[in-house]
Image (cartoon, rainbow, N blue to C red; front, side, top):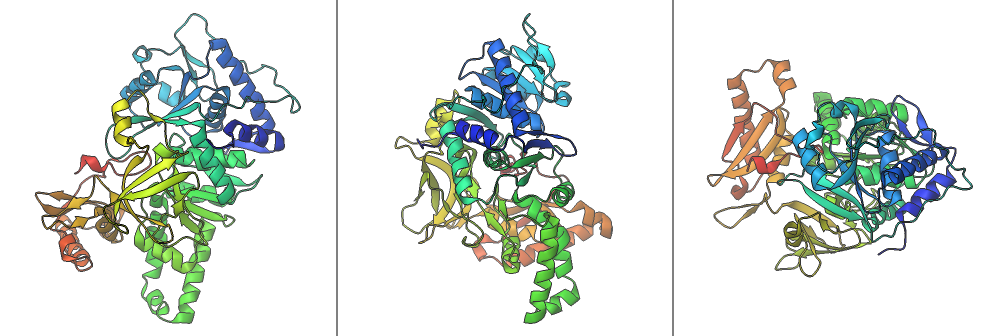
Length: 539
C-alpha cells in the first residue's frame, strides 16, 4: 500500500481551491470547489437516510457531466463503492450488471431512464435522475428525496473521512474487445496510485482547464480527465456530447485546455482528413524534398495542428489502443508534443508512460513506479506476454473467482493478454494481443495490428481487421463512405482499388505476412464505447 490517500487528495483540492471553478458542463455554468463541497455533504446525508453502509454499491450511468463527477466523488468519499456503467450498454445489460453488483441505489440520465423496466431490478431501493438528483422511481414506501437545501458546512468546518487504501472503491464492468464484461474491483490504493503518478509526471497546475470527452465509465477517462486534474485543483469541463473530432476540436478552440487526453482514433482521423491531403499535394511533395522548404512545411502543419487543439496545451497523452505507426512517425518529425501510454482497466489503468521529451518512438513508455513488469518469454529480448504485479493491480473480478484465478496467477502476476518486448532501457513495445496473434503453418508469428496499420493509411480504407480464415491471411475492410460518394465509385471500381491496395501492402511486408484475400464490408465493425473494434466477433 502507498502512503498517499485518494480522499485526502480530494479534501486538499477542495480546501485549497474553494472559490475556483471545479466541475463544469460545456455550454453551462459550473460548481466552485466550495459549492461542490456542499453537494458532497448533501449526498452523504442522502446516503445516511437510505442506511447506506461502507462497502455498499451505488450504480451510476449517464453522459459525462458535473453531476456525474459530483456523484462519483460523493460515493467514494463516503466509503461506498461506485459502479459506473457505460451508457452504451443495452437495457438488458444494465439490469444484469446493476443486479450482479448488488447495488442499492442507481443514478441514471433521464434519457436512459425512459428505456428502463424497473421491475427487472432486484435490490435497488431508489432510482434517481442524474440530471437533477430528483427521484425517478422508488421501490420502498420511504421516498427519500435529495435535500437540495440541506445546510452545507463552511470552509473552516469541511472535512472528509480518509477511507483506507485497502478498501474497495469501484467496480468497473468493461465491455472490452475479447468477450463478455467482467466486474473489475479496484481499491482506493489502485486509484490513488494512478493519481499520484500523474501528479508527479503529467503537466497540470491549479486553475488549469481540461476537457473531459473520454467515457468516464472507463478508468482511462476517469483517472486522467477527472480524478487527477481534480486533485490538482483544475477546472474540468465535461463535453457531454458525442465526441466526434469536429465537436472535440471546436471545444478545444473555445476552452484551450492545458492537457489533452485522447485515443488514437481522434488523432488519426485529424491526420488522415486534414494533414495528409495537404502534404500529399504535388507542390507539398516537392517542397518536402528540399531541406529548408521541408522545415517550412512542417512548421506550418505543426502550427495548424496546435491550433486545432486549442493552442495552449502542454502535452497530448494518447492511450486506449495502439497508435498508427505512420501517424506517430509524422507527428514526431514535426515536433508535436505528444506521448503514448499503455494501460488496462485491471490496473486502474496506467501501466507504462513517458513524457514527450524523453520517450522513444513507437514505445508505450516505461513502467510506472508502483508496478513490476516482466515479459513471459523463453528468451530475454524476445516477444512474450506482459505480466504485472504491484499497487495498481485489481483485487480481482467481482463474484467471479474462476476468471480472477485465470487473470492473476498463484505468484500474484497479472496476465495482461498483451504481447510486448522490453528494450535495454526499460521501454515497452506492444506487439499485439495473445488472442489475435496468428501462428502460420511454418511457425511464424504474425501480429495482425502491423498489417492493419498499413491498410489504415490508404485513402479508401476506413477500418480494417486482419484475421486467419482457412489458413489464409484475410483482411476485412470497411471502405471510406465519404470518399466513395465524393468520387461516385462503382462496386467494380472499389474492388479494383482494393486489389491494388493488396499488392501495395504485400510489397511492404515479409512473404509470411502477405495478405491472401480481401473482404469488403458493407457496414462498420462493431466497437466498444472506447472505439476499439470487437475483434472476437470477426476472428
